[in-house]
Length: 379
Image 1: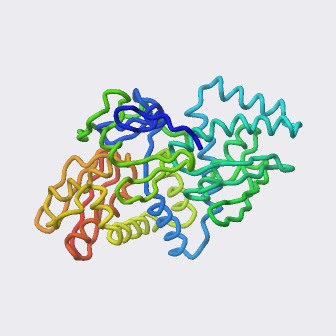
Image 2: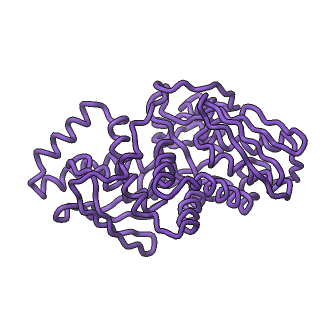
Image 3: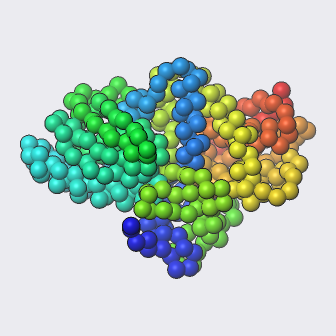
């Protein structure tokens, strides 16, 4: 079992405080305003979106997600790894391409780095990666979302050895997935949906005033320390009160998967996301209240109720609700730096329906100026 090094003051693991910082504008990124934006989401919640889309359209989407995640992993490495490290990885990949034993040595080195990422992202454990003919095999233990983990694991190896795409096969039993990836020379057509993401320092963000209190020793928000608990031996983390498993990923990872699904499967995908998330929120509303520290007492649908509930979107890195207004029966919420408008519209309409006990219609402004206004009204 891994020895967990954590802050003596707040108890948050060092690998979290060294890699993530929760900003008052509703964003998560590296400390000192560096790196890509990160979002956190419940594993069950994200699985509900993927499987719900699959059910609505009547087609499997696992392979679409895997292929897109491979391209996303390439872009992640390009942005997050220093130039010298990327050049070294590519050079070593070319030099040892013909030697299976040297390839396996390189894989062990890369796997150590990947395990460090998985510890605080909560994706699960990668074991026994090996070269197999023209690809790799591996075991994925306790995977959060299997297609994402397959694409991420294979993508990191493909980047090193210069293979732009891969064909995946897998079987899962009792929390362990055995995967086999055959590397391909031709780039996947789905790579067109993935572009270089902007980092914190490259983005014009709107302000926000999330009510965070930061640990004086490690710098992590005390609200985060009270919200999550980490289990690095499982490469996973959980909401403390409900016990629900969470995972983290780059915001562009979250969005580009849905962008790909919309491009490949139709323009109705955002509406499907809204409907699926709305129903998920309603079904799990007691847990939502618990996460917002509102498990006791009845909510009456006042502005303060929604403000307290919507604090969770900042903790998850999806932006910050800066204005919440009830105008008659309508609820209007302005969110600065929104992570995904359709997802947020589903959350807010789901909360409204759970509290007001009525069906709704929802509209939102596209986030062209760094904010969106989501309006929920009774039908």
